[in-house]
Structures are given as C-alpha cells and as structure tokens.
Amino acid sequence: MQNSNQRFLLKSRPDGIAGPEHFQEDVQPVRMPGPGELLVESVYISIDPAMRVWVSANPGYVLPVEIGTPMRAGGIGRVLVSEDPAFQVGDFVNARLGWQSHPTVRAADSQKLDLSVGTPQDWIGPLGTTALTAYFGLFDVGAAKAGETVLISAAAGGVGQMAAQMAKIKGCRVVGIAGGAEKCRYLTETLGLDAVIDYKAGGLAEAYAKALPDGCDVFFDNVGGEQLDLAIDHLRENGRIAICGRISQTAASELYGVKNLGLLIGKRGRIQGFIVFDFNARYPEARTWIAEQLKAGTLQQRLHILDGLDKAPEGLGMLFKGENQGKLVVQVAAE
Ligand SMILES: NC(=O)c1ccc[n+]([C@@H]2O[C@H](COP(=O)([O-])OP(=O)(O)OC[C@H]3O[C@@H](n4cnc5c(N)ncnc54)[C@H](OP(=O)(O)O)[C@@H]3O)[C@@H](O)[C@H]2O)c1
Image (cartoon, rainbow, N blue to C red):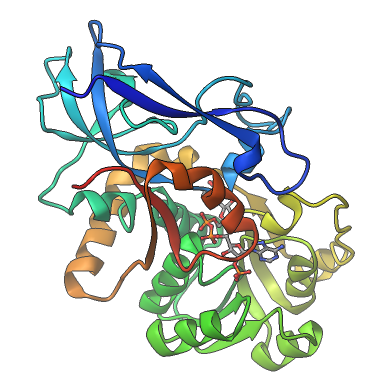
C-alpha cells in the first residue's frame, strides 16, 4: 500500500504566466478515507488554461485556489481504498484529484468510468471535458449548421482541434487559427481543415481576408483580443460568436480593447460566453456521439503527455506560450 502523497501547493499568485516558482512541492502521509470517501492513485491529470484563472485572487465564476493548498485539477485515477459501496478497488474514476499523487476524494464528486466506451486515456482525452467543451460550444452556443463557415482560434489545441473536427463532421467549411507553420500543417494535412491562419506569421488582417472571402457564420473563440476583433469584422449576417476562452488576455498585463462590437448591430450578430459545466446534464448525449465518431475513426485527439507530477507547474506555463501540441496532460502513474 502506498503511504505517501506527493502534492504541489499554490505558493504565490502569479502576475503574468504561472510557472514552477508559484508552486511548492510537499509529501504527506496518505489520508485513509472515511465513510463516503475514496483513496485514489492519480493516473492522468488535466492541465487547463482555466487553472491560471483559478490561482488569481478573483476568478469570478469559482472560488480562488487558496495559498498553501493543493492546486485544483481534474483527472483520472485508480481506486486504492473505497469507503463507498458504489466503488470497488481497481475502478477508474474521473475526480477532482488536484495536483496530488494519492488524494483522498469524496465519492459523491467522483464518476466511475465505463471502460467499454473508452480507455482511461480516452477519458482524459476525447471523452473528457475539453471535447465536451468543443461539442456544446460548437453545436449549442455556436449553433453551427452544415454548409456554414466556422472559424476557430487556438485550433490546434485541446478544445480547438476537437471543435475543428466536429465542424468538419457536421459538413462545415472550417478555418483554423494557430501559431506557427507546424501547427497549421497539422490542421490542414492531418485534420483536413479548409484553410488556416498562422497568427504568428504577420499580416493578420490580410490573412483573415484571404481565408474568409465570404466571411464566417460561426466564430469559436478560445483566444480573444485582436483575433476576436477581426472575426467580428468578418462575421456574416446572423453570425454567432461562442466565447469559450480568452487565453491571449488571461495573463496579459494590459487588456486588448475590442473595437468592432458595434458591427454586431448591423450584422444582427450574437456573442455568447459559456461554461461547459452548464451542460452537465447532457454529457451522456455528447459522449455517445463522440464515442461513435471515435469508433468510426472520424475523430481523434492529439494528446501532449508530460511524464510525472513534477511537470505540472511547468506545464501550466506551456499553454500560455503555445508549447503544447494538443491536449495537455500529466501522466502520474501507469494505466
Ligand atoms: N468555457 C469553458 O467551459 C472552457 C472549458 C475548457 C477550456 N476553455 C478554454 O478553451 C481554450 C483552450 O483550452 P485548451 O485546454 O484546449 O488549451 P489549448 O488550446 O490546448 O492550449 C492553449 C493554446 O492557446 C494558444 N495561445 C496561448 N497564448 C496565446 C496568445 N497570447 N495568443 C493566441 N493564442 C495563444 C496556444 O496555441 P498557439 O500555439 O496556436 O498559439 C496554446 O497552445 C482556453 O481559452 C480555455 O480557457 C473553456
């Protein structure tokens, strides 16, 4: 039986990009579970841009992570000890593990994985929250329809690559925005996107005009700032903008002032933010659709796996420097 729990605690609140200097490692004895609790071995931990928001003093939609407490994170783990009759030793669960190797979690907050639908790695990847975010952001908030043009920012990232493929499956013309030639090549050659915009190559306004000669009906925005402004410029009449994230602004010292909002009036455009948890009750519907696509081979998710819990603090910074090649995950233990 494992008797120590490696943890990374929040040491200080970052001003800009978060990194290892903002976290502190410690090792504690594992806490044996009480009634309704599980002792879990973390296997995969998801690294998400939202974590940078959670370590700020006022995240807005959730409570901040307190200094001196384990960094908040979701992940997939294996049950080592169960004090809840609904969970057996060896079950895989989706739970609020935090940056911990052997957390003790509430069974009521944990979901037993159905391994007939996908492997534990599938559950952190294409069946996980980033894919659900893409599904509801694209089909509900963006209301994308066959034949429409969909523009997606951070299109090579975890959420973006799923939204891009889902829009292709739906029969849309899909244009992706990404930083650098390698990510743009991945979008056209591997995912089959119709056009790409490399926002790091310069001439952004010209690149939008070239990739969107007839504008776009849906903008799935993960980035905000100038990319949002230009998308409003190119939005077609009755177009929809789904605000999924604004990573260019999250750790910025100075916020970009979006200038083109007035254009939404004449375009009858709609702009709407959303949180994936709003769609909690409909996760099974989305997962059924995603599982069918995985089985048919029409959907894939590129995972970027870092080896070991020690990599989590550095991993969070990678998201803000575009250093991840797909959905970023830390593998803490073997499946
Ligand atoms: N609303 C929700 O419920 C919800 C749920 C999950 C995630 N999200 C949001 O979805 C977005 C994507 O999350 P993810 O987990 O899939 O991360 P990700 O896209 O895999 O990684 C972040 C990517 O953002 C791009 N980026 C970073 N800084 C940038 C900047 N200054 N300007 C332009 N692009 C920048 C980088 O791609 P490039 O190399 O292409 O620059 C980077 O790889 C985030 O904004 C996140 O907050 C929202």
